[in-house]
Length: 199
Image (cartoon, rainbow, N blue to C red):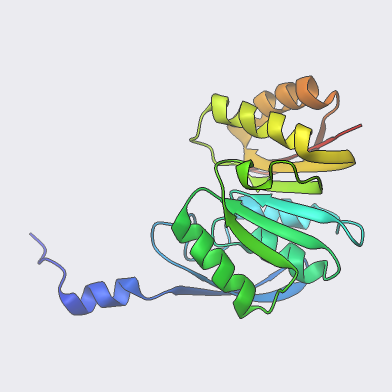
């Protein structure tokens, strides 16, 4: 039987995980912690999404849904300095870290908001929505997310999701139903990048 962890070991675990990375061609320093998604490194799904996403037009309003500690939203804010970026998550710890990472990287064009789905931007139009879709929230939540995204997007706006490959056909079908169009941007070994446009 291994010994119980002592106070010193726990104090070490409480320290922030620090990730120095390059996303969308931008250098970022991001802090994370245990309990948040992919706390030690930028996960493969996020990297695939950002590697295959063009930079939004200048002056865009951008939403990062389910932002975690903020790699998507922070990289968008840094790459799109004249755009507005809103990071949303239902987890207050994620929002605390995301807001800290925006400040740490001096990203004054972005903010993090605690939100159940898109509730914190209800009534605010936006031009792009990005999400590394949580795989375990269930189809009901994905349906709500897609409907609220369609409703909130300005005309000509785009939604970009990355999901595990097992959800590929589901998002193809439901995006076609909700938006009337669908584009499989990139399928990798584990993840697929999906896109739809509000026409």
